[in-house]
Length: 186
Length: 331
Image (cartoon, rainbow over all chains, first blue to last red; front, side):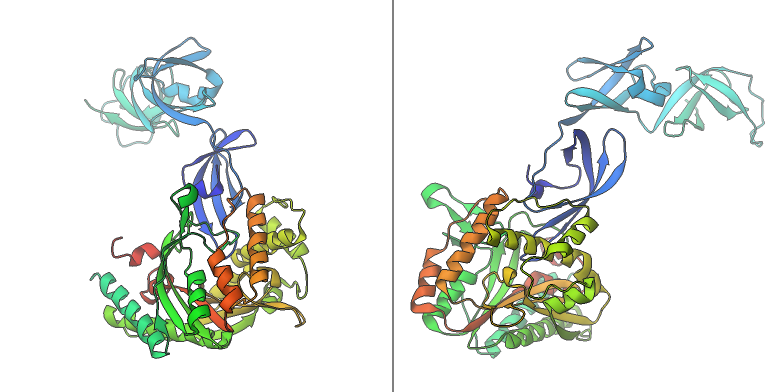
């Protein structure tokens, strides 16, 4: 690929790693060499760097694809997801899932990142709604104090919740911080 | 807010025609799709057709207009649609308008005065239709390339064959590594290195220097010989320099002018050198405009100066906009 193909969101292969262009600025004197000044983000590590290319340079496209898949189950070391379009199943190791395993509810839809046809990352929705499976009894009326207690939700994940929360209730949880957002009434 | 974009373009086009006609130039109209364009290191023409029918959309009307001057010895101007592939930003569009004009027997100083006057006339006309008072005219200054290079970087490259350590430090500052183009031919290598140096210097130093001087517009003249393009080079001067200037208004490049090269053999050599550079960069080599080279040989080009001005950018500045898209009536 030629540098003139550079634009936002294009996926590049640099030193064997996949990077995505997040910012892009083209600078060129009328009769001069064009400069492509970019910010690029490593799709595996998330780190962002500045990078400039010149007219005439060549680039390699990264073989990267994002597919929507549904979480099915896990056996402790591997998590299995299914593509709803073609029913293909994919196993992904625990270490790639990381802390997001706390939010993998049955049939949750996630984005799976494939690099060279291997799953390398999973993105869960920014929040999920899960049921409380275990906690101490709720204290009626105590909504004013900031005091919290421990609760466990359906994936086995534990978090701090307000004192009025009872077993069986549904909670909205922020997957980026792991924190309680609010109770969901249905 | 009222949309004045149609009236703005009408006023700008009228101001251009009125100024240049008033100065005695004839308006001409030359082909849009041609068998060959001027060969430049990093200007990409759009290709039309294939094989024996392979043609190009003009990247500037320069070659045809110089042929007119060869044959008719008259001052001429054109408002041309041109296209340069792969150039897109807030200040670049692939297709844009160049106002290009030639004056027989004149000096670059006359063209520089033309550029300043044209900018003033267009600014006044555009402000008029927008119902604004004409903004104050910038103070136009003329600076020689090597002087400004030294002022901004501390490096003196007068008489230097190669940009040397300055290119190295500009590359480091941009996080770029060394020569991407290995060239056995010294002329090709020098062209590549000066071109890259100029681009990096413009981005890292010239733009900031201009930004620090709001209210000042600049004609940058006496370019390094390697960057002469289609201009004459004065090799007897110390240091040698190219009779070329670039005008910068509102911090952006708006015009590029030459004391036109008249030597057909030298012109052919330069086109071939540029093609060699393009080949090393993996860019397509381009056919030479033999009809132009033939006219340059005979009847020959009288001593003349020529300049191309980016009308879209001038209209953008005059209208107080920041992106070319903002002044597009279809935008």
